[in-house]
Image (cartoon, rainbow, N blue to C red; front, side):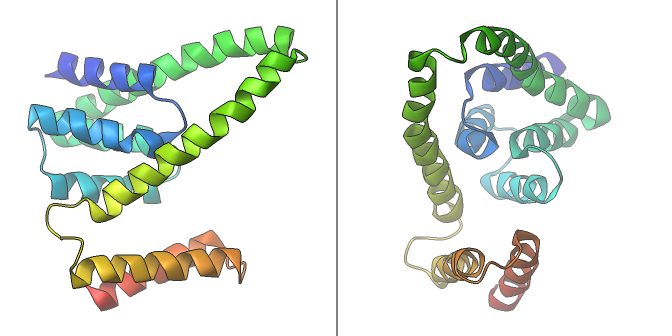
Length: 177
């Protein structure tokens, strides 16, 4: 089981691009295929991982590993998911320092922005409304959309600090659900 945890998160670490939120769906699919945890438990772990400092993908891997095999499972999962990134960042930094003035390199970064945005939006929709416990046309879905819209307006229009918005959203969740 430890080896499976390491390989699973090593694979996620190797093929993930765009940050933690972009790979949540990938992690969920791999975990569901193995039948290790339920969709509801996965959502709870992701919510907890999102509140903790650090990358949500790394935190989710750690929590899944811990839920499966205790402390050693958490450590193995964490090493599995961060090892590829660590090695890639070291290699990429060496390359980028030599190639940073190249127009093709700079242009490729502008080309990657839309796909990363799309992956994050997909993950948000899938995570927020793709739950098996709630349908698209339920009061839970309406409540989630209401909290989402209020949070977006609070951050963009009223410039409320994201931490305060998180706390207020938690209170909203307690009231609504």
